[in-house]
Length: 285
Ligand code: KIV
Image (tube, rainbow, N blue to C red; front, top):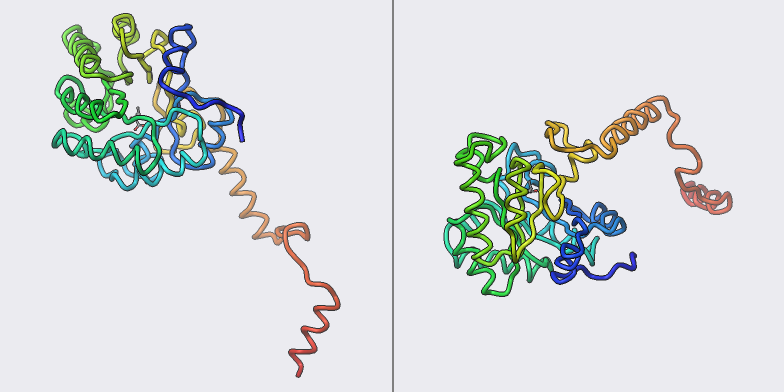
């Protein structure tokens, strides 16, 4: 176990005030959470991207609340100290403020999350306020919001034009006024992200593919280790090709079993001569 202290909201804001960039990664399972805990990652997001990275869907819409709770519980077991955010899946907060509060509450009560995240701007302000009033910290999510990918014209950069960029800035203001402690900006141009970061007074900004000017950075874990075979987003930096290591290992395993090189004596268990003789004698009776 690590000797880290539990990350709290004041702890996150202190790092921001001290000018230390925040580290944030997605995570969906116990062993990965264990490693992220050891690495001292500040914020872990159990993203509904698990619909793609873990469950193999083409998007996030099929992900259910029960999927998110199950994976968030596993992540919490692996990381006691990171600031843990549960990502509200599709249609668990859009229909009503009441539904949003009840589902946000499940993340806190059933998975020991520290906060929730939801997608959308001004149109989600009443959901944000309702959840915050229920005592649950909320992270907003602007720019490319995958649950609205169809309406946004696909998985593409948002805010390249001045009009659209102004709307994202206005949405960030609306979310801050509604009470978010943080906003994630996904695939927004760097200077738009800079403007939003400079304007943020009571919340901090996290960038996913939105440049270096935010208060912190997020990467999708599977992208940073070559673990998502369908595609690699342009913005993702690969910090190690775990996918290749695993594939090479699997091919070697198949070869060694086929060629009868595996298992070797150190890979299995034996019975003593005496017990074996007794066993054979008992079978002859
Ligand atoms: O689900 C997720 O992992 C996310 C990121 C894409 C920000 O929301």
